Length: 357
Image (tube, rainbow, N blue to C red; front, side, top):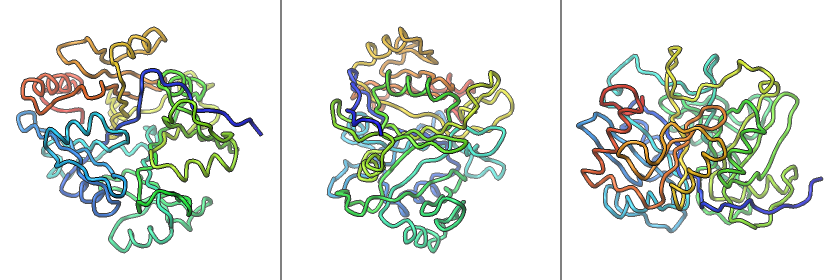
């Protein structure tokens, strides 16, 4: 067994802050997360002049009171938060388009993103309660080879894994946002990117005959961690409140020079879009991105590009978009700042006046 280690250095103060998903109808999808899993609307941006809206949902710890959504206080909370949220992107009109679909990331030939996950103490009871409420399931906890975990479906068809929390966990929430999973071609390259460059710690790895799983999170540097291949590592994660990043490696993909996962955004071969990006806050955006560029990271948008300041978009080794945001640096309730921000995202979409669909 490997020796106990400590959490990785994180000199730029990176923290996993968001997972972005495109949705069809906020009147259906927002209540899905709020009513079933205890998410709260943390903040909302509505841009009728550009025909899109953003909904930020989070699960606060028991006893925490969130600011009123849509206020300067909630905006400040969003861009300084210690935990993670979902960013749900709605392009006006999709709610009435019977042909609108997303790529949930799990159907060939355009796999990539896999799922988000929630954690609860009793997966079986939670699944029964959700199914009674009308939630559809991809896999119930007693189905398939892997017992005790379940996958339900959002209204768009994204997978939401339901995993077990330790019975003696100090976390009192019925549910927490537990993970974001996507598939990677080469774990060596991906672990270097997320651990060595973005300050995440490898908490656990699990190896199987044809695939491996790697669980990463931002942990205070120097924190003692159990051996990543131990039962204690699983227990550590089952007691956490913050979510982890789960990287899934299907063995052999790293040997195929033509192999590529869909990043959720590209449409060059007629792919549907779905998952958009993960996002990280950092203490000094310019300094952090300069170091990433020196390390060979490619960028979709650097901090100094265009008129928009306060954020950047990098590519991870698989081409997934990684948003990097100046902590407490965005003020989109300011109309002039909002205009610049929206124009940037319109350009990113390569479609006139629309957010990435």
